[in-house]
Structures are given as C-alpha cells and as structure tokens.
Length: 349
Image 1: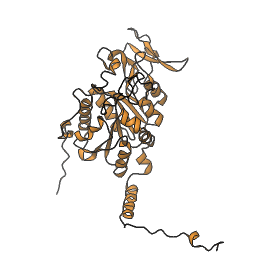
Image 2: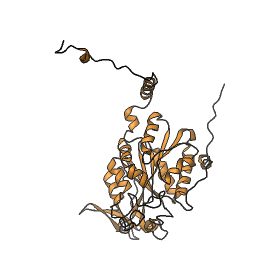
Image 3: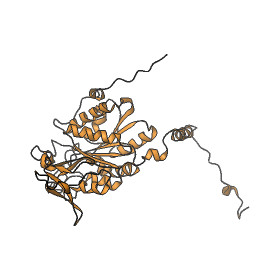
Image 4: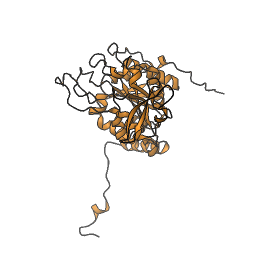
C-alpha cells in the first residue's frame, strides 16, 4: 500500500530563489521580502501553489526573488493579470506586488476594479511616495511641495491616500504596516492571507536614495511612541505606552486625542477598535501626524463573498473553460449560422 507522507515544513529560506537580490543598499524592500518569506513559511504555504504577480517599479522585481511561480508583467496591469491567474486556477494563492506609482497612477483603474470585485488576492502596495526606478519623480502619493526632477518647484498636487482610495473602491480588507517592523508586518500579512477576498495592505517603505526618511515623523526612533497607533480589533485605541487614546468628538464626529491619567482617568472615553466599522476605518485612515498618530494594523476587515465565490468556482467554471478551449482550438475559421430573419422573404413570411 502506498502511504503519502505529509510535506515537510518549509523554512523562510526555502522561499528564496537563487537570484541575486538587486535593490539599493538600505532599501526597505529587503525587509518586506524577508517578512513575506517568513509569513509563507509560518502559514505552511507550498511554493508550487503560490504565485507572485508584479507590475513595473523597484518593488516589481519581487517575483524574481521568490522560489514560487511568478509573473513580472507590464506597468499597472498586475491586478488584471493576477485576476486571470486566480480565475483560471482558484486553488492558487496569488499575491500582487505593486508600488504607489505602478498601482495608483497608470494602474489606478485596474486597482479600483480588482478591489470592488473582491477578487481573492493579497495586494501589497509599497508606498515610498516617489518613483524610485525612474530616478525620483514625484508620484501620486507625494506630498504637496515635494521637489523632484519632475516637480523642481515642488509638487502642487494633493496626494492620494492609498487606504482611503481602497475604502472608496469598496475593499473589504484594508491594513497598514511599516517595512522595518517585522513582527507587526508579518502579523498583518498573515491576516491578509487568511481573508477571503481582496486584501489591500499599504506598506510604508523607505527609499533611501530619492526620498529618504520621508516617514521619519512617525517611523523615527524618537517619534514612534507618540506617532504610531497599533490598532487591534476589540482593543482600546491607545498609544504612547497607554498614556493617550482616541475618543469621538460628539460635536463634529471627529477623532481627537485624550490623555489617560495614571489613575485611569479618561480611559472610559477611549474608543474600542471595531474592524468591521467602515466609518471608523475612514476616520483612522485620515489621521496625520503631528496632530494625530498614524494608524497601523488592520483598519477594516468585513468579509463578503469573493468574486470567485460569486461566479461559482469549481466544476462549473472548469467545464466552461474547457468548452471555451475546445471552441478556440477547433480550427482557424468559424461558420456563423444565418438567423431566421436573414432568410425570411421581404415583407415577412
């Protein structure tokens, strides 16, 4: 009798390809790569059932460095290609790797529709607020005043907020993390992978060459305690070592900071995070330092049927694909049968 032995557990290094990793020294992409490889090992992923799809940009080198299947596609089209991969083989675990330029500029249309359709993908958007691969032009997420080769006088455009964009597109899972905070980033990636439907994760990623320390106001060692709020479903929205929290101002329904005394005074005013509350997610996404902390973690998670589940993944979709394949391979020409109206005499029967 043949006995099928369970697959041996894999290590993070088992997901690393033999390709030389070629990002600038100090680039945040290295940390993200390590976090993804650790995540896959921890969840028991199998390389033969995992696919990474990328567009164009520094982040889009990612598939080369993963010992899985992968596609390095064209600018902005990674969500479309990934949708095709997932619809063709729903059993695959498909990850989309994109940047703020690739995903929100030329790829903004594709990103919008993959989120509203709720295709079962993990979408990791590396946000460094600059075009790094093409030598530092301002991107859709660059702040007003950003000086670059394409905006020497400073950008005059209001930036796109990736998570607010995702909320507006109808995404059902939205999260934020920082490239170098490995433990937290891995936890967010695991939550994204466990979600059925489109998971959108914005990762603040430092471009050491063209936009160094652009996030230092909340990622810097001296700023993190006061300017980062790690949200967790069912837990109070507190930060600064528990000395501060968020409450809802009843006058204008905005969020504001409340001081929590040593005796616990003020703690009863602090909101508790509800990841299923879309309105709260929008308020958290809009917070900006220095007046407010940056919200990190799973801001919104309210699952509904994925695009594939609505279409009816399984035998029916497979049968449809096989039928289409037979038609396409039947020959080089098709005969279109005449309709009854084409053969009827003038004036009717």
